[in-house]
Length: 377
Image 1 (cartoon, rainbow, N blue to C red):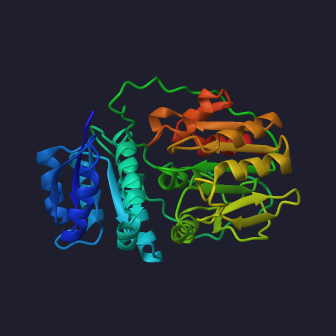
Image 2 (image 1 turned 90 degrees about the vertical axis):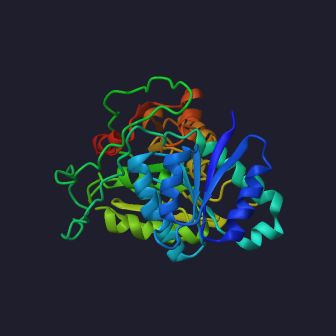
C-alpha cells in the first residue's frame, strides 16, 4: 500500500529535497506541498494524506498551531522536523503535546553528507507513523497539568495523590489494519519495589507525561526513565517533566544516587546502568547499538543489581527494545508491565513484550500511573 505524504516547509530547498527523498521510495507518494501552516491545514483537508511532514518555524502560521488545527479537523500522523538545540527540543516537545507523532532532526549537513542514511531514516519514519494510532475521528491532546504551587512533600510517609487530576484520555483509534482487542489486567501485585524502570520510544514523551503526573511527590520507589531521544533533547525533556510532575525529574548524571520520589532520565546518546549500591552509571553510547539510550541495557543492569525488586514498564514505541532486558528481569523474579495496544501511538515495544509472554500485566496508558501507586508500598 502506497503511503501518501504532504510535505510542509517554508524553505523551497528543504521541500524539494524531502520530496525527492520520499519519492525515490516506490511505496511513498508525495501528493502535495505547503509553505506555511495555513496552507498545510487547507492541503490536509483537501488531499487527506496518510502522513504530514511539518516544519515548526514558518510564516503566517507556525507548525505547532497547524498541528493543533489538523488534529481537531482531520487527525493525521505528523512527523516534525526539529533543530538540535535546546530551543528546538522545547518546541518539538510542544509539537508532540499538540498531537505530532514523532520528529527528526532538521540537519542540512546530514542530507548532503549522508544522503542514503537520511533517506532510510526518513522513509522508515514515514512508514512507521503511517501505521500509528493517530488517524482518529477525534483527537484530544493530554490536558496540561498545572504544577502544584506547594513544595514537594518530604519523603517520609506515602500517601496516594488525591489532588492529581488524570490527564484527558485520548480517544483510542484502530490503525488501518484490524487490531486485536486490548488486554486488561486486574489489580497489580503489591510489593516493596526498590526500583521502577520505564522504557519507551515513539509516543513516549506524551505517554511519560501522562504516567508521571499521576504520581505523588512522596512516591516510595526510585524511578529510571529510558526514552529514545537525541542528546540535545533529554535535558529539556527532563526539565519539562520536572515542572509538570509532583515527583522530581532530572537528566541522569554519572554517580547520581537513586532515591524515592526522584525520576532519572537517561541522557540521549549515552547508556544508563544501575549498580548494586543504587548509583547510576552513564557510559558512552556504543556505536554497535541501535539505541542510545537503550532500554535493554538499563533493564539488564537493574536485573543484576536488584533481582526480584524491580517493576518495569514498557510503553509505546517502535521495535523491540526492552524485550531482552525484560526477559532478564523476569528470570530474576521481577514484574514487567506493558501498555495496551489501543492506547499506544506505536504498538511495537509493548507488543514485543506481550508476544514473548513476558508481561505480568497489560494496562491502558491512563491506568498505569494509578496502578504504580497501588503496586508500590
